[in-house]
Amino acid sequence: MKNEFSDKLINILHKDFEDILTILKALSNENRLKVLISLINNERSFNDLKDITKLKKTALSNHLNDLLDINLVDRPDHGIYSITNDGLDFLRALSSAFKFSDIKMRKEIDEVQQRKMSQEFRKKILHRG
Image 1: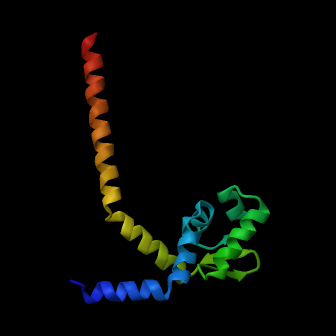
Image 2 (image 1 turned 90 degrees about the vertical axis):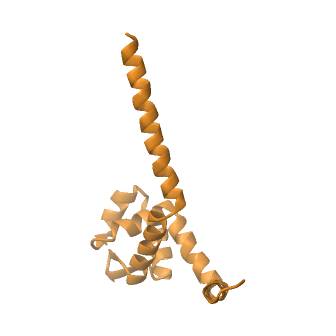
Image 3 (image 1 turned 180 degrees about the vertical axis):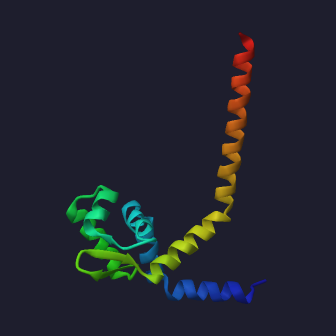
């Protein structure tokens, strides 16, 4: 049985499909995501972002223009960049979704199991000699 929430979600996703896809593509690029994360707490100069991302000028400029075009980043002054409210909102939503995801839980469980196996292995090796 369909519910009202899923119908609304489907309608929104269909209606704004291209815009959502553009944002997801921007967030899925490692360098653009690094830029956005580095802007969370404060504005940064172009050179700061260049140092953080280790990108060449042209590549960084292209990434910044992509983020500016979709309003995830703003340029309040020449050579200075800041994250927009939309940029922050999308990062918060992404972080929140991941924080409570099954993917993260499975990864944490795997890490605990790996540590436990590693500790047991070390105990066996140390008690041999």
